[in-house]
Amino acid sequence: MNEALIKRNSLLGAKVVEALNKRHFEAYYVENKSEALKKALELIPSSHSVSWGGSVTIDEIGLKDELKKRGNILIDRNSANSPEEREEIMRKALLCDTFLMSSNAITEDGELYNIDGHANRVAALCFGPKYVVIVAGMNKIVKDMDAAYSKVRNYTAPVNAQRFNLDTPCCKTGACFNCNSIQSICAQMVETRFCRPQGRIKVILVGEELGF
Image 1 (cartoon, rainbow, N blue to C red):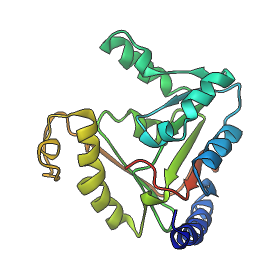
Image 2 (cartoon, helix red, strand yellow; image 1 turned 90 degrees about the vertical axis):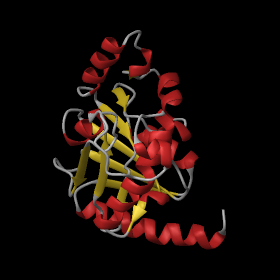
Image 3 (cartoon, helix red, strand yellow; image 1 turned 180 degrees about the vertical axis):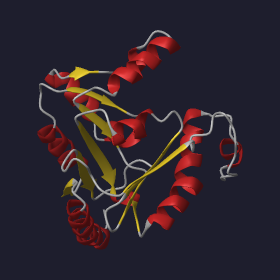
């Protein structure tokens, strides 16, 4: 990575971590994916049951594989043999010890912004699991909540619609149409202003580009 970008990410990352901690999150900055994996494993006890939302970032750092090797109990919706079983596993995930996810956007002053279609991910973020561990690349950092909304609706949502091959206008055109499609992944929009109870949500910022 370019040294100027490394320095910029480090400086801005420290500022965002400070802002997150002031909002009662437990936040950390690491330089790369391998350090992110190490920090996440430190934050998740081996005795914890673990589940997750759909996250490219979590896959990119290899966290699920390492948790499986370590022997954590994994609540994995992809292990289901039917849509009904998948739904039931997603409900059980809301009672896990640690829930894994990324954040669609994080503002420079320490707020989270997330959108969801099925709402299982934002539901777990708000309440249910004892702890939430968020891993986010510095490409998720935006200036403020207006920038968060614009980024997520106009870029993140269309990319994820492509990833899941949804029947939405953004999947066909690459641009947001503020649609009413039943498959829209913009059904739920959640702004997390601060963490309550304190320290329940742990955020690992990574000085690389991860996810969308």
